[in-house]
Length: 350
Image 1 (tube, one colour):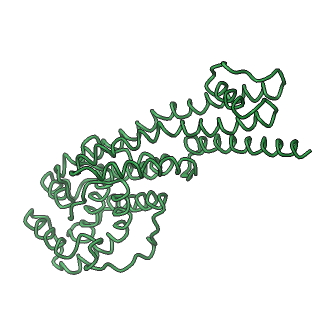
Image 2 (cartoon, rainbow, N blue to C red; image 1 turned 90 degrees about the vertical axis):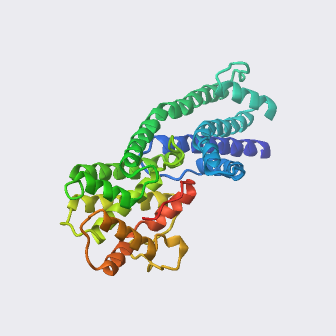
Image 3 (cartoon, rainbow, N blue to C red; image 1 turned 30 degrees about the horizontal axis):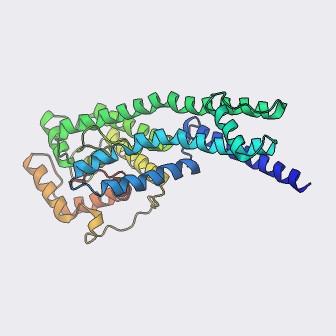
């Protein structure tokens, strides 16, 4: 009686493990919501520690970047391997509970079914045969899920990087918000730039959707070591904050909407990765805190550069600085957190 009860509990445990793994795969790639999946977190966190350790041996940022560029692709390949391994274990104990012999034979049956090898068949009983066929079906399903969603992820990555590359063309290789504003002013697009702000607003909305529903996208690095989607977000938001606080220009609702979309996107992505910040009531800005760059001197230098570029500015620099730092407090913490998390290039002060 005890043996029967033990096998029944073991079979239920195996079924639970299999069902949980399949549900994890569905939540990862089918459910259009930002779900945190435990098995995925274990895989990516474990690999992250290994890659971080290897990257720390690099002497230059370029060497570390080459190492970390492999992290997300390797993680994606490791994910279905982990799923299949857990499913194999779940079915192994299911076959054991159905009386298919010792654990070694059950393991061979499970992997033969999962990989559709047919080298080890269960007995002629109906339930083990049904379990064998169901495992083969789930194995194919899990692999198909990942393969079918790879094009979707790389399309999202390509669209993201298109904006990153275009920003570099406008603001230079060592881009900054001031350089971007100077380019706008030079081309006459500082006041009438509705299309550009609308494009960036759409980009921010897509970043929020794709980088929370497919969080591994956050770790896909740009083709060029000096580029990063995180620094691009920072430059665009900084440029908008400088215009709102410092430039003596008519109000631009398209730019303000883009700024709002960017703040919402970067904070939601960072919160998905467990960053906690009260964006509704930000903490006071402290000039003495080195983590709250740029500081007052950086802003003064930016003010002088914009003045030299003949950008119309508000005469009260101190009031402009106070408004700028209040605006920056809405996204600075999230930017700093994600820059560290993704090992982005150093963010240049304004």
